[in-house]
Every structure is written in structure tokens, then in C-alpha cells.
Length: 204
Picture (cartoon, rainbow, N blue to C red):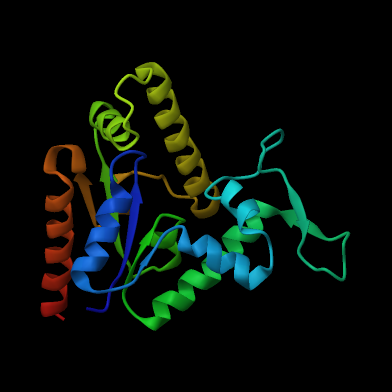
């Protein structure tokens, strides 16, 4: 198998779990939050600061509007932390792609690696809320509050993707395959993607 698998996902759709299980099934590396740790090690910038600015863009009044010198010898030359994180993660993602097949979650990896297998995972709001409430073991959580939280995370991911790629997040034509995990189930999604990858390799 030679493909990099990039998985974009709606919040609560189980995209991360699908990616993790897929990587295990195919016996290849899996990268999600690990990219932040790697970026921190490369840049010597706090991992906590990077976590706070993960998949967000800098806006006026936005908490991501935190600045750090990119050059320690020129403290007056500063760029926003989200931009620094994106540049560093882009370099890391390209290096990982050169090392061989892997699964990468989000972070515009589908655009960074042009020949990646591009996957989008979605689900209905009802299914996503049920999944998140089950994961958090909080069946009595305020459903409206949960829905607002889901929509806010999706909005953040959409803005991040469009800001750094110019493409529309979640638009089917931008992906090789879009799967509804709420209807299909997590395991079926894993099997479908794995079959797509292995079938593609057999035709090379």
C-alpha cells in the first residue's frame, strides 16, 4: 500500500476513531494530536500553546490572536501562532508522506498531500449528539448546548480549511469518498476505506 489517507470529519462523527482503527487494520502509522507534539519539538514552542491554536485561524478578538517570535534573534518579527503551527505541521506532514503510507486526521492534509486518498466522514446531528453523550457518559447533558458546541467546532474546522486551502470543507467533489458513519457504523466505514485502498493498490 502506497497511499497517504487523509480523513476530514464532522465533529462527533467518529472520524478519528475510524482513522485509528483503519491504521491498525492496515498496519500503518496514525497521526492526529501527535502532529502537535512533533511541531512543538521541532519549534521549541509550548505544546499547550499549539493545542490551544489547533485547527483555528487568527481573527481580531479571537483567542488564537497570540503572537510568538518566529526568530528568537529578531523579537520584533512575529507571526500568529496558528500560522506558525500550520507551516510547521505542513512540513511535518510532507516528511511523513515521504516515509510511507499513514493515516492523517484533518489539518488540511488532503490538500498538502495531493495524491492522498481523501476521505470525509459525516453523520446526522442526532447521531453525533448521541455518540458524544455516550462517550462523555452524560446522558442528561443539555442537548441544545451540545448541538451549539458541535456546530461551533464544525464552523471552526470549515473556516480553518477554507482559510488555508481556498477550498470548501465537506464538499463531496473535493474528496475521493464521503461516508455517513451514523448510517453505516464505524466498523463498516473502516472496511469500506480499507477495501478502497487495497483495491486501488491491486490495480496499480
